Image (cartoon, rainbow over all chains, first blue to last red):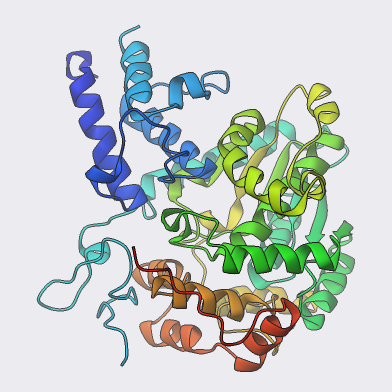
Length: 88
Length: 343
């Protein structure tokens, strides 16, 4: 896996494409700084879907402990989390 | 005027983000929108499910809680759990007050035939009808989370999931099995660890609405007590066995008939157990312009497990007497307008 491709910009772009396709929303519906749950884009099952997408796309397992608001509280937080993990 | 539908599947013109090509084929058929047909994901899940069962089988009082509605899919799930995967299961049924009497008979016959333990939990009828009334009228969910489920089914399933988790935690059961099929759930949720603490946080906004409406009763049905959580070291996995089975409805029925299962006649074309389902579909269709079953049935068509004609027949089979019954039981005027107010 070429880690140099995992920049924050790339991760954000891939995540937004996934969210739009999977949850049937337009990019303009997504507030990058707000919780996807609070803004009604996803429900709790959506979090499982996102964690599974991350695992598959970036090749690391999201642990139970990592499934928290600090890491999943907004698109930007998810991007930061993924970037941190892939570049460990 | 009839709805314009995809010429391959049955998704209709009001479905979110839909578009049609010059042949009338929708972008869900041509562009694989949604993560439901990922074969690699399904193959991976099949292996992982077997591995997890092998690792845990026989080490607990029960291997799995099975959410059993009496419908065909959960009956087949129960059969798979016992006969194919050799699990010791606890069958759990939520009696929502609207289960067809034939479905109830099916539950008794099937659990007897399979020789398994069964729990039925019936919340107070007043709470359930109040919950359905609230979910129908008050537009409590964001439409984005209702593309494949009606508001009432969503509320009901929240209770099923919560009570199944409660039984699993109380009895230290490592798996919760449900009968969801692909189309009802995405391929990447065939199995997942039930991270209750995080889920609770994400469910808080909707729980708050329920608490405001119904008071503390809500926690009895929709939350796990702090006491139980404190005594919990590990959470169970939720697994949808039907999602890794390629099987048609007729084949399922053929396999469960020997268990004594019979198809109820007092339900709609999309249900084999619940008498409020046709009302739920009616509300969803009036509010959003499409059926909550379009996505699931379209998935089955794409997989070759259902014909387009059969799917349309199911959507059209919505008995008016069942819809009328629900209006009466939920104390909603039959002339109630469920459409969203224009913005």
